[in-house]
Image 1 (tube, one colour):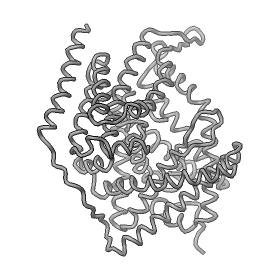
Image 2 (spheres, rainbow over the protein chains, first blue to last red; image 1 turned 180 degrees about the vertical axis):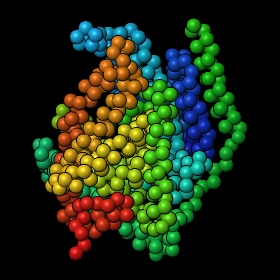
Image 3 (cartoon, chains in turn brown, orange; image 1 turned 90 degrees about the horizontal axis):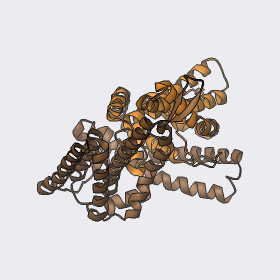
Image 4 (cartoon, chains in turn green, purple; image 1 turned 60 degrees about the vertical axis):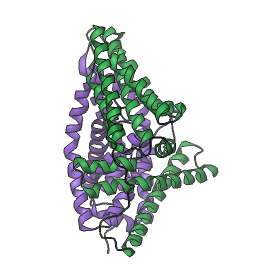
Length: 250
Length: 228
């Protein structure tokens, strides 16, 4: 989490308007889902990884480690798509070629889609993305709530890690029974601290005249139309190439 | 275990989003109204949401050696009530997609449905139901958290089975395949989560009556002793 957030704040494309990154990422995601997979998938994967590593200057190792999470899910799920279970003659498991194709398609789609998400989260901090939710009609109060949660997550994570370290140093996790009790105490203590924090924030804000709206300065970042056009041209090129490849495939 | 980005076919991803949407909107409406009535509710909700995220990232003591996480759906439903939990759970899942690359944007709807809607409602229903039968609180909490957890995984298996029916035996066969993968790993985990939730609730009941009373805004919480 720390690594992803760190790169989101420090990469070379940090100062771009968030729409210039969100729009291509979402378009590629939709293209991946809509076009025939085996042609568009590898193209999208290559394009997004290249953009993240070459363009935004995020180390390849980080990109791969972020992609490892969905890849692990695939490894767990894919074998079961290729194996077929039938109860017509008793109970039998057998390998199915249809299932293998489905498994291949699903892994390509999932990896390509995950690479779009990876590109987005490694180049754009959450605080840039969340305000865009207002444009799709989510009330200001909820958006503010989401941003507050984002802020508090890091505070609480640090506390949880410290607490866990302290417990582990006192052999709190030696054995399952003790481990469950320690984890329960940790979570309980964390909850108490969380509510305490909320109360302190409330007092602090009330002293500053808080009445339901948090006013913060957001840096102005104008949307650069030329840049957006170039990026989207690339995305369309990828889509066209994918479509042509799929045509040649048949 | 969240369904990874792009794993579901587009039609399924869209359908689950449509199914989950009304619940999330209802939760958001309720939260928004609460926040407008009392501005300080916003901070309470924010602290609760951040806590839910950290809880879901908390490593459980593992039995099988695999790295395992709590779902937090049971505790969330018990503390905040299922309608607010639908909103908080959605925010947590969004953050897990955007901060940890767990789950994804296209599968957000499917994951919200299993983790933030079905899990909490089952847990809440069980808590209420067993309390009405005058079961000891620890037993209700354990059952609520454990079965809420298992409901979540059953729904996930259903979603995967619907998306990938077995070529020979159809959806039923596929469901058996997926549930048999989940069962051996998730059953012990669900029990551990049940125990963990009992420890947490006991601790809170002993030391945090005031805080629990604050949460009464979200849902009537049976563990608070009636003020005498």
